[in-house]
Image (tube, rainbow, N blue to C red):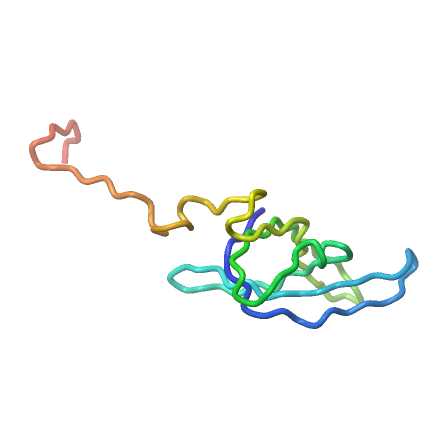
Length: 119
């Protein structure tokens, strides 16, 4: 799944020690444009933090996985980015609908066109 939007916040990087060694995580808030803009918190793990090199106000397309897990009878959901492409980079391109007009083209008809519908 891909989400395209603008980075509006970078949360502090956190790290720790796990059974597989040291881990690093940084979350960022992506605002997705629409009539009612949505904000999504996305996590970057390990070396992907350095590869992405995100800054506030960057326009990006994030390739994500959504995963939920249970702990003490409660469910927790995380959105993890496995690839982040900045707008204008060679690796990714924003969908055509996001590039300019967010609405699909409108088809118009005139009354002169024949219509086989009975109503």
